[in-house]
Image (cartoon, rainbow, N blue to C red; front, side, top):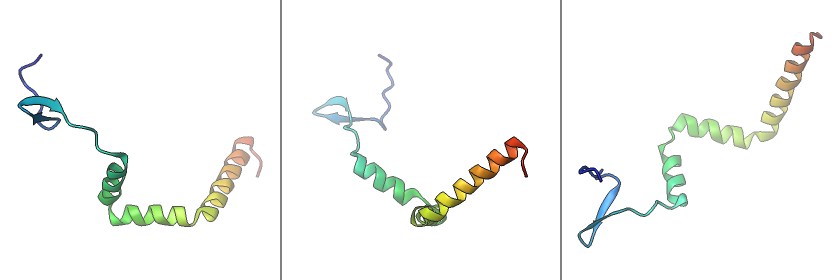
Length: 73
């Protein structure tokens, strides 16, 4: 075992060095949401809130891509 133990990932419990328990998923998701900037959060909210328009736009882009690959105007 190496003499160096990373302190960021272990804790002392009763004088014994043990790994910390994993952070619950709900807390990790809340932390990830808090770390998003206001612009990214606003963009994500707009995409989710306007999902019908987003779906139609993606369908249109897909159809144009297929038409371009086939060489038809």
